[in-house]
Image (cartoon, rainbow, N blue to C red):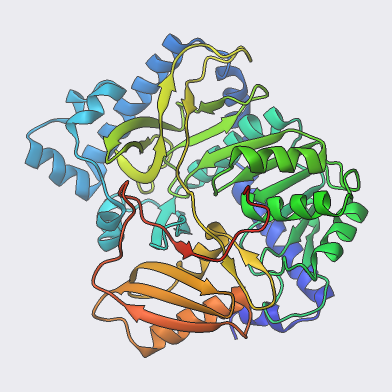
Length: 461
C-alpha cells in the first residue's frame, strides 16, 4: 500500500497526524538553508530603483545563460545550432536571439534540460498548470527556498500576514476522500498552523459546515484557488452572514480573478484580496501590492510579452533554478502591458497589467460540488503516457475527458486516470474518455482544461 492509499484508509485523527508529519518534513525543505538570507535580500531589493534592478537582472541572466551553455545538453546544442556563445547574451533584451520554448518540448525530453554532470539533491516536482498537460521537473533546494522566500516577502507580507499566522488553505491535494459524504471536510497541519480545506466537497449541502469551521478556526489568512474561496464568499453573501469570518488577508492564485469576484470576496470577508501569479516551473513570479498593482519579481525571472493571436503571451526565463533551467518558456498566459514606472507603493519592481490567462470553466459534480481548473489539473499530473487533456461537461451527471496520448497509453493508464478523477470528483459522476490526435485551442491559441455549458455559482449575469 502506498502512502496516499494508506492516508485515505486512516481515521481522521491519524490523517491529521500524517498531514502534520508532512508539514514537519517540508519545513526544512522550504524554509531551511538560505531561506532567511533570500527573504532579507528580497525585502531590501524591492525598494531599489528600476535601473539598479535591471542591471542586477542582466547579471543574473548572464550567469544563468553561462550555466546553461556549460552544463545543460539542450542549450549546448541550441547555442551550437544558432552559432552563438553564451557570452553573446549580456542583457535580458538579448534573450530574444533564442527561440521560444514550448512545454511539449520539455515534456518529451526532460532529461535534456537537466545539468550534465547531474546535480545532487534535486527536488522532484510536477505541474499540470491549468492546461491538463502534465510536466515533470526538478528544482534545486535553493530554488525551492527562493520561491518560498519570494512568496513570504512579496505576497504574504504585502497582504499583511506572515509565515506561521493561522491559515486556512484551499488547494488541490485530496486531503478528504472524495466519496466522504459527511464532514469534517478539512484536516489540520499543525506544523504550518494550517487548516487544509478540501476543494472537492464544496457543495451547497456542505457550505454551512465550512463556514462554521472557518468561523471556529478564525484564520488570519485565507489562501488558495480563486474558485474555491469565491464559492465560500458567495455563500456568505447569499445568506447574509457577512462578518462571521474576518481574516486579515485573502490570497488567491492559480485561476483568473475577475473584478466581480474580487468585489464579492472582499465584501464577504471584509479585507483586501491579494492576487498572486507564479508557475510551478519556477520561471516567473508576480504579486499585488497594497495598491492593487501586480509587481513582477525581476530576480526570479525575466518576463516578456510576446504578440500571439489576438493578445500578448507571457514568456518567462527562470533565473533561480539551475536544476532544470528554462529560457524563454511559453506560459500560455496572457498580459497586456509591462511598466517600469515606480508605483505609488514606492517599490521599483516592474508592473504587469491585464493578466488574462487562466480563464476557465468549472466542473460540477452530481453532489453539487464545483471544482476549478487548478485542482482539476492535479488529476492528470501523474498519468503515464498522457500528453494533454481537456474535460467537457454539459450536465453535472457526466464528464467527457478528451485525451491526447502517446502510443504507449494503455488500459492500466486509463484505469489510473479514472481513479484519479474519481478521487477528486466522487464515485457517482459518469466518465467518458475520448482519444484525439490533437486537442483544440481557443481563438487566442490557448488550451483550456475545462469547457462547460453548466453555469458557475456566483458568476455575474
